Every structure is written in structure tokens, then in C-alpha cells.
Image (cartoon, rainbow, N blue to C red; front, side, top):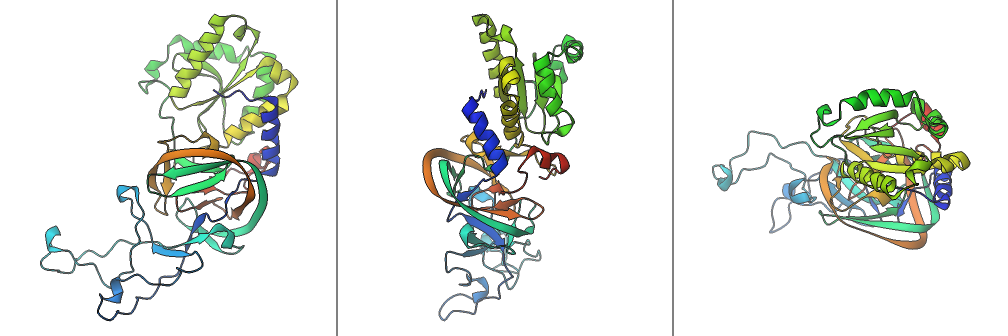
Length: 376
């Protein structure tokens, strides 16, 4: 459960206005390259058709063809001039040529992000190359998150950067069935929608109609509880608590149990007091908008953007153009003051690093922008 201070809410407003989410210099970004010609045979060695070329391996640029998902590791594959031979141990007859052509691969080169410029092409989460519209650099002062994957790759990025992950929320009841919700809760939820408190109505006026970029439902049953507001797209619950929630230890214990139940389902819970809504509605809405950025992909609802600061070990990220699932092994953070870099990508609004897929900058600086257009 997240309850943000006034200072954190002000920070949320500042981040939304600035929309500066960046990565450390040296971060390697996957870019397309032309199919290289077969390398010439080397004297005393094997045929160049199966050797690794040298192009693209200087100035910190690493070239390879696609990535394999086996054992959560990327592997470089040389370009094939002819179909691969099947070794006898795999059923081949002394090196007979396979009748099945090799699978198509993406020709990929890894480029340090600070070397990229407007007009260059990068791969996005849709597996296609997209043009860089602009690049940006700035001096960042704040928390830097270090993410290490089980593929041996790592990434350092600012706390508000979005990373593509496997969706945590699978269902809203332990059984995954509507039968897990008390039958009378549906009638009760309908009645509660007609009797919202003034603070609840104030929040709902800014949530309805996808004003946060995602759809919210009011008074939505979740297991044995009814959430004030719920968004399926970002797995977010918003609660507005009246004075009765703070009057007794029993009421506070009930809310703690309620939070634990929802968080165990993978939901994010934001709680605000009615006083906060009445005195700092802008800060409350900024906090909700910040978490609502963690929406699922339209093209694949099982994948979801997640703030770097909200990532956990064992969360699954996606590596390579093929989006191979990679568990996060370790996450750490520290305060820093350093120059960071980001790029703005056309259409897809994402790019792929050597560890995972991350959202780019400049793709939704304000809630108004999200009202006009939603992108994956």
C-alpha cells in the first residue's frame, strides 16, 4: 500500500511536467543493421560462412544476429551462407544438409545510447525498427536503480522510468472465479455507487472517462472487499478513507488486512484520507496519474509497464527483439548526481536495451496528452 507525503506528491507533479526519465550513459540499445556479407575463409580455420565478422565491433558497438531464449542468455550467431548441417548425434547422417531452412533472425547491433542521434533506427517492443525523433541529456540528481537479470545483463535507470514486465495481476479472487466474490457484494456495490461521499465524488470526476489514460471503475468488488476505484489496465486500487477509518484500532487493522489481500493479488493500492482530497486534490491526482502510467500493452494484456522503483526480484522482464522472458535477479538503488541520456522514439515509444524493454521519454508529459492519445 502506498501513502505518499505532500513532498512526494509535489515530486509527482514535477515529474509529470518534466517527463524526464533517463538511463545511464553506456546503456546499450538494440539497433538494426544490414545483413553483413559472409566473412572470407580464414587460413587454417573453418569456413568464413560460419565465422563471426568484425564489422560493428569497434567504438563500443557490438553486432550480432538476434538472441536465443535458451537458459535466459543471449547468444551471438554467425550469418549462414548455407543451411546448417545436422550432427550425427542429432539424427543427421554424417553431416547431411537439413531440408529445413534456418529460422529468420534479426540482425542486431548494440549501440551505447549516447552515440545515437535523431534519424537513427532502434528496435521497439513490437519487434520492428522505429526512428529516433530526438535525443536528450541532462544532469540528474536522485535515486538510480540498478537492475540485474538472470541473463547476466544489467541496467541503470532513473526511478520513474518504465520497464516492460509480465503482468502481476492474474485474477481478483484466489480461485479466479466470480464465485469467489460474495453474491450480496454486487447489490451493495451498486448501492454504494449512488451514495459516494463528496471526497469520493471529487476524485471520481477526474478518473472517469479515461482522464488518467486508463479506465477506472467505481465501487468494484475484489474478493471479499469492494474497492472505491479500480483500474484493470494498470492493476491499481484507489481508496478514499473517511474519518471512521482512523477512529479505532479495529478499523485500521481491517484496512491493513484489506491492503494485504489486494497486494497479494499483485494489485497496487493507493490510500488517501478525505482530508487530503479536500486540501490537496492536485497532489492526490498527480499521485494517481503517476501510478496509472503502469498500464498493460494494448497488443498483449499479459505485459505491463512498471516503474523502476516498483520492480521486485523475480519480476519478469523481456530481453531481445524476440522479447524472451528474463527473471530479475537483483535490484539495488543509490543516490547519484550524473549526466543521463534518453531518446524519443517514433510511434512505439519504447526501445530495447541489452537487458530489457523500456519506455522512452517525451511520450505523455501531461494527463491532457493521455486524454488525446494512448500508446503502448
